[in-house]
Length: 423
Ligand code: UD1
Image (cartoon, rainbow, N blue to C red):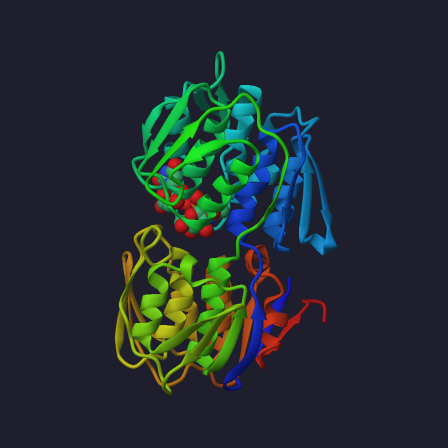
């Protein structure tokens, strides 16, 4: 298994290109199952999670071709006739559950294994299930698989989600595009990836209004057609690299980065002492003083502070001036990076869903273990400002969600390299 070795070496300067959003691409790909005509995605990120979704769609009978080294994904579900999403693929990644809505809408039945993915909490699927049941699906759990069927197809319904789940919103919106009648989805998630999905579905002929608000209305149509759609910029990758100069100093331009996708995150950066300026091609990020200020963070649904940037923010707070309190409200068990940061000399107390971080002058390099996707990158960020060498072990999580992290950070002057276990 690969390791990433980082030697903290001061300010970063230069440009980093932001890739297409992993989470948007993972919901756009299953949308191919809704149509017999081709769906082509451009600006796709090159990540192992995308390869897992490719394998899953192929197993369902879809044709998936990647071009331009993976940046373009051309899909056709013309002959897709399998409706069983197998445990061996689904267990690798929770986003596999996003085939449930499309399969049900297309075939009237679907068998989807309960997913795995990052070990950051229980992550059940009850919200997806209740929404689809409200549209007339009968769903039961047998042998670890959700068995879903409809008699006479899905029907539009007035649905209120008990929590604004991103995945449940995506599954329900996709299913509702081919349902009979109108679906009104209340307490819907508002994340930019949902807006991107709706824009793509609309190009395919879907009739949808209200994306980006908490009420989405979908008028079912008989069929969807083909389309080509560029994947939106990755706001979590953008936020992650915005925090690199916060830790190491310097000035970094993020090509393709978009402030409008970042919600409350940018306000926190300002309070920390980080300047963010929009340019015609992206964003410039610069640390104002020698050390950032401690700020308190509460993770919330969009446009609140994203849970997917909490670990990275904790890495920044480890060397901030003062004490910060980070409260995780979206997932339980999402502080697994804390013990690893403590190995690097951080002062962190975790009690339930709250972590209190007392900033220290400097962290020190150490051997650390990547425990989940965002935790992995938080350790790399911490290492950029630490004294000496940090070895981040078990980086396969990182490859699920960050494209060429070592190349992107080397390009702005970081001393970072990937070492294969057998080297
Ligand atoms: C998506 C993102 C993930 C991000 C998360 C929250 C993708 C591929 N992944 O995950 O990176 O961290 O949004 O922004 O887009 N829940 C239930 N029952 C359900 C569904 C969810 O209790 O049926 C709970 C989960 O356990 C979790 C919370 O709701 O505590 C948020 O989950 P959800 O918004 O569904 O996240 P995902 O779509 O899985």
